Structure formats: structure tokens, C-alpha cells
Length: 207
Image 1: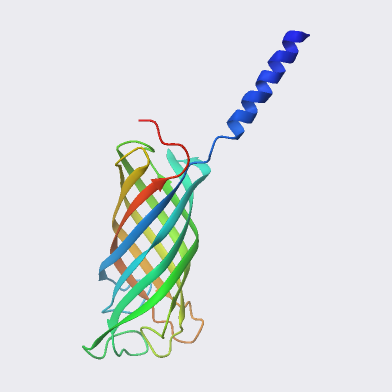
Image 2: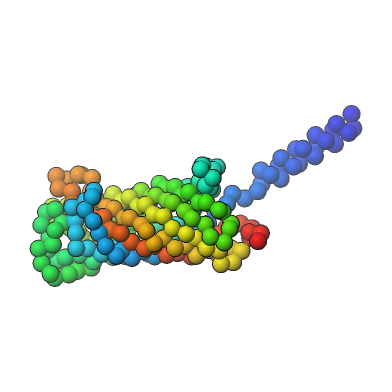
């Protein structure tokens, strides 16, 4: 009877210890620069997009196709849109004059698939959805101040230290448009490169 009690107590203690293990998560300080655009889901052209912000990744959904499934959220306090000073209602430039329009962004919904977790090289695939707000109507005077955004990216993370990784997202897409909140929907799709430093929260990883 005493042995059974000791075994039960040990099992409870082990269960509590496992429950207290921190969830894998990280904070990424990131920057993005576009290097081209194309017309697939949006009609805008002649623009370049630059962003700076912070991304949070948390291992929330187990594994799928041998990849760690993470929840992703992002805040972009810095967005710069290099665009034509004047455009038609669909976002096609009508002048060579340029202007830079600032904005902010927030993506509360996203996921990341991370393969080879904690190895030297870690491929990933991610997508994020949210909203952008500029301080003026962009791409068209018939547009809106707010736009919905959708980002997708593939890239690599490389391990630098027990806590820090370097993220190299060389093949990414950034789309934004107003989803016909008004009759005219001049959006933009840009190809971009995204770089970041990732800091792992919790205990340091074991090499």
C-alpha cells in the first residue's frame, strides 16, 4: 500500500513537472524590402514597399508533415510605400513624380511551418493576414485609408547562438487591397526579401 502511494505521488509530481515546461516561442525583429511586383490579385504597379516590425511565433499546434506548427502574429510600426505622386483609379502611375507614404500594420492571424527545428539550417513556410493603415489614400484617390494585407513567405533560419537565429526570407509576397470596401479596389502585390533576428524565449536551447 505504501509503495502504491509512493508511485502515485511520483507520477503526479512528474505530470506537474511536464506541465510546467515552457512552450517554445520566439520574438523576431524584422525588416522587409520589395524588389519587384506583379499583377495577379491586384492592379497596382510602379511601387516599392518597405517595412520594419516585430513578429511573435509560438508552438501551438503540434506537428504536420514533419514541420512544427506555430501561431504567428506581427506588428509593423514602420511602413513606407514609395509610389507615384498621381495614379489612375486602378493604381497605374500617370506621372514620374514620386512620394513616400508612411503607414502602420497589424497581422493578428498567421501560421508558420518550421522544419528541422533546432538544427543548423531550418526551412520554413509562413502566412500572415491583417490590416494596413496609411496616412492618406494610396494607389488611387478613390481607394481607402485602410487595406487588408496577406503575406506569404518561404525561407531559412540559421542558428547563431543558443538563443538567437538569423532569418533569411528571400522569396516572399506581400499583398494589400481594400477588398472592395469601396467600388474601386486598387491593390498591390510585391515580391520582397525579409530579414530578421530571432530571439528564443524561455530556457536556452541545448546544442
